[in-house]
Length: 408
Image (tube, one colour):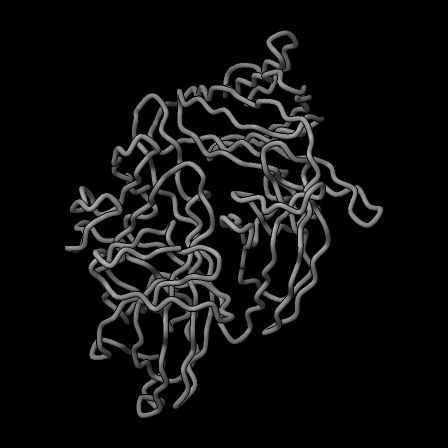
């Protein structure tokens, strides 16, 4: 990956283990405050870096981070203090496969901090974007046609993005936090309104506990690299009451031109899933330990694909309301039938989508921010479109023939 020298800001690019996610800046420590007066003379340092999961929908996703605030209080709405003021505009899609942007180091009083919060800015910095132009907006996307579209902030985002993840600052030591800003899960695709909405999904990890997983995706037939493969690490949370929450994406990335990928993970056992048009879905178990490294080679087998497409129609066309569509498949992993997510979409009223997926039977899980989760089963035929229209007051059409009710 090349970093354009004209971007006009300094990034620290590293491929070392880090785990939790947090956004920060490059200001001094004069505003940093801490948890307890009796610890005021005992200080450590907080280092904050930014990374990103994948998004195939855009050429660039820019966000402007104005402040990083920390909270040492047990009160959720009290005790917020500014720790960093980066005022930086960053292209999230440049931060893949182990690359991260250093956003600042500051001193904090030693002690436990219960959560942190990102404040997104309303004015971009003075750098230029990937097209060599001044930023048109503070937060925006560049679509495949090269057009810039402002990201409207969801109401819950306007007061800051809360990350309820505690961390400790030890005297004379540095705590490194990594903020993983999942662009794919954070952006609601435009519908009839033509507006894109930012509903941020951000996670955080402490770098000294992170595992680093890397590998290469190749063809099982000829060993050639398969660039552009989406590689994700998932958890099947069957105990979750809501079906939409039974698949959780822990981390994801896209294989580069050489088929190589890298991800930061917490310790645990997961499902490693790889998806690429023209190949069968790949899935296997993956167990990693804290601070460890793991190497995984993925070999994909060619398979026929079909098209999964549809239109979102919502009874309430409010910009705040959107529909999530998760396309899931049953894969046998180590002799056990396991549900994995092949792709997902977040879209507002009137939006249309079209994705390629291996031929076969799928579970479609649809949910909105205000209505109950619904599910139906579809079959994607090779080279044959499978049309699905999801409506809060409507039906699902399969293959243009069979009608299945999924009333919300």
